[in-house]
Length: 389
Picture 1: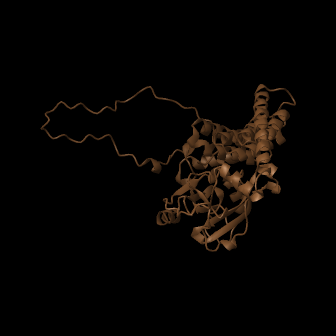
Picture 2: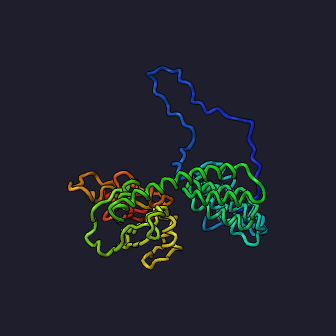
Picture 3: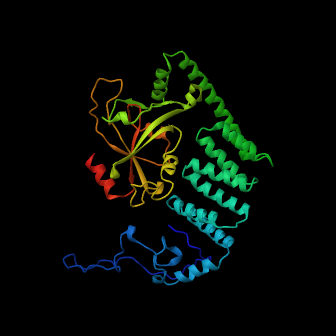
C-alpha cells in the first residue's frame, strides 16, 4: 500500500437494493436449463486494483492515466507539511482499523507523517508513538522500543510511549529496563498502568535473578567452561551437530558468553548467512541469541545496492526472506547417521536467533548456525528450495 494525501471523504450508502437471488426452477427436469448469468466474471482477488485514486494501493508511473489523481497530487503540493503529516496520520489510523492485514500500510503512513519537515515536536512524538503501537501488535519489539525512545525525546510527557516501550521490554525479558522505563513515565504523575507493569516486571526480575544464580552455582560446579556452555545451550533447546561444510575452516569462531562472563546468561554465536543466488556469504562473528535477524540485515544492507554483487539492487531487509534447513547434519554426541528428512523452514526476520535455534529438528552444524537468504517471491528462491528439498 502507498499513502496518498487526500481530503476527508464522507461515506454514503444507498437505500435502494436489488435482488441477487437465482431464479427458481419450476420447469420439467427433462427440459434443458439455460445458464444463468450474473454479469461479467470478476478477476482473481490478487488481480484486483482499485481505479478510484482514494483507494489505490500504489501510484501508477503516469499520473495522467487515472482521472483525479493529478488533482490529488496538486492538492498534496498545496498542503503545508503539518497538514500533510496529519493527513498521513489519519490514513494510518484508518489502515490500522481495518485489521492486521493492513498494519504494514499503517506503518508506511505513520512513517510518511514522521518524515514531513518542520513538524511540531509533540505531534511528531505522537506519530512515532502511533507507529510503535502498530509494531507492538506485530510483536516487532525492537522497533517499538526504538520509536518510543524517539517519541519520549520529542515529548517527555508522552505517557503512551513510556508504557509501550516498557511493554516491549517486558515481553523481551528486559525486566530491569522495563521497570526503569515505568519509573521515568511516572515522574510527572503516577500512572496506574505503569505502576502495575513495574510490579509485574520486578516480580519477573526476581525470578530471573534467582534462576541465574542457581544456574551459575551449577555451572561453577561443572567440569569446565566449555561443558557449562554446551549444557546451557542444550537447556535452551539448541541441538548441537557435527560439521556440515568441507570448507568449514573458512569460518573461525565458537559460541561464548557475552563479555566472556557466564553470569550474563547471554550466549553469543558466530553465524553464517548464505546468499545462494550470487554464491556469496556473510560471517557474523558476534550474533547475540536475543538479537533479531532484521537488526543484522539492516546493518548488512542499509540501502539498495549496498553490496557490489547486488546488481539488481534487491537486497534490503523488506525484500528478503530467510530459511533454515532441518536435519542438515548428524547430532554431535551420537554415532548414528541422521536419516531424518531435511526440510526447509521459513524464519521470520523479526525472530530472535534463539527462537530460530529452537526450531524442531534444527541442528547447529559445528556450533555455527547457518541460514539462507533469498529475495522474497523470486523464481530462484522457489527453484532452489524445490531442487534441494
